[in-house]
Image (tube, rainbow, N blue to C red; front, side, top):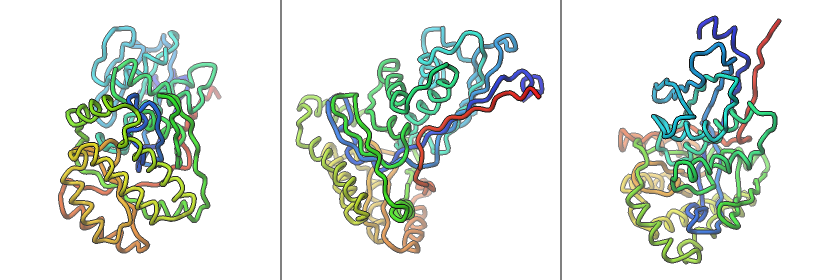
Length: 355
């Protein structure tokens, strides 16, 4: 950054938000399900946003955006109709109504790879909206930030989106989400002793397929079927039950029961459409079985690409050997180190030092 920019800068706002794994009950947090139950876990690596605030008079352009993962640095004009290079980011900026008397330099970075099926886009929206919220006089609650992020995707961009990813990014931790009427939901965070938290963290493995999640054709077919059959479809009911069984297992510290719930949920996803469980996923599951893993869950809605959460057994050595075998099976397969998030959205600012 140029010295003059640093001198003119009023403050820097930082925010981070976790991604989501192990979403038992996913698909039931949608408009066509009408009501649902989801268990999920917020984890790091997180999405990071940094907003540098300047007097408008010191900048030629009002808002610049650096999408760091793409090496894309450009000017955003929220008052102009239509989206440019990164619609999700630009729509969030427009939604938040930036004050007219300031200029912003916004940087966004995600440690999780794009298309990982771990709610990364929702975490991006939550982190960006949370940071931009700090420009106003009031403050949005985590729930309000999550709903704002959801509206950006559904109302502004007209995308298909459930509500669980945004809520997990906003709250972090381990969550039991009850959607009583789309999109309105309550979030019950699951608090467990450190010994169970640490053991769960030690056992979890996130495997990225090495290519972006591709879902549109299969998902459109699944949505059409579920929409036609209504919210009481037995396939949706089965998924709703998986959220409760996962919650009960974590409270009890019963990792075998949690693993069974993850497996049952993955099988229930396959019943929606066999293409939701890809050949690559099946290949990794077979390696996990031989390595004494007790559970596995296709993250997100499923389909080609994306990722798989694996719940390993008691021996750390078997976990490490399993990861080696998975990565050796296909050069695209990659283990992404994760840690359970104690917090959801975090925002803080550094004011200009006039001393």
